[in-house]
Image (cartoon, helix red, strand yellow):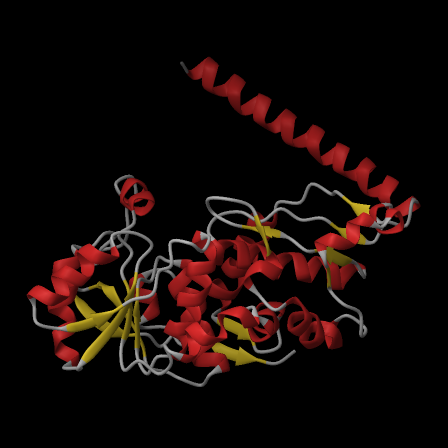
Length: 325
């Protein structure tokens, strides 16, 4: 068994070494051909993809690249511009890229000259994103002018969703229920710190929410919205949610992201990148510190971490320094 494990480890190291050498040759080839449009692959759900996009924009800035408009989508492939206003994004990001558009629209690849500029470097954006977050968490800092913050500031929904937002602004209290089937399956294999809950009973969360004594609660979850609303009804609490089955899953997620960002108070789940980025936007960009988590100490606790940490205990005990560099 030990021999088999050692052999497996050696094969893994060999594979990584070969991949590293291949990437070096590929990079050299693309540089000689003066290819400067990077095609990227984003991983995970909406907010994990956004974390990958932050890392890709850092690479593009460092190397004077542009990015080919990336694909999004959970159930089917869609493009960045199907969710967000690409013109607005490019206009806001231009100052960090010498006045150039950072994103090249996907339909521009019809032009042969554009296709010849595309590079397909094998870059693990998720790994780079994790590395960046680990650095910030370890040093207890957030850079106010980082690519993470600049990209968040530049994300605006496609104008075709403006009416939906207009009808869902300024909810007194908004909550993320992280109870989707993918999380239920994932959570059973996870361990977290003492006093932290990895998967909450939705009825328990509703009981916890009563402390806010609000007339109406907006909630979001990727599945079973009617079931959650029925629990609110049983507790005589008025509730609302947004989910349009005709829209791709990640479009629904992006719309809910903006609705929750605009709420007066937001309660989220610290282990969710969705809650992390909403809190970061609310506190650092919208100047709204009314952000809470429900998965620590069997209570709803106020976050003081600007959305940086994922461990419940850190969210409510560490305030990072904001640094401009």
